Length: 92
Image 1 (cartoon, rainbow, N blue to C red):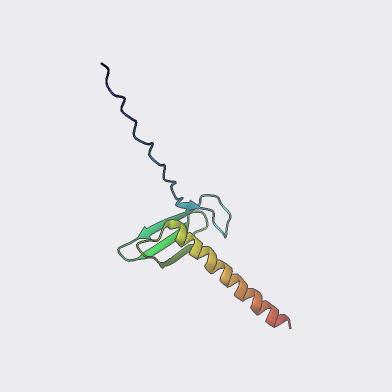
Image 2 (cartoon, rainbow, N blue to C red):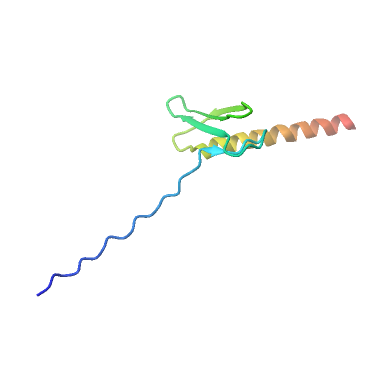
């Protein structure tokens, strides 16, 4: 008599890795922005290695580097909108 066939365990799911290197919105260099997370002080830092621009924000235990980068991009957009509004007011 032969052995019973044992079924193979299901394959493990591959978890996609989130990037920690991003494109700088100021100098447009690809993979020049490094995101660092300090969960002890609850601060996130993104810094461009080419032009030296920096941005810090508060983080939580659920935050990822992409969240800090996204906050930076949102802050840049808000500043640009405010400047556009001021320029329109001065033109009138």
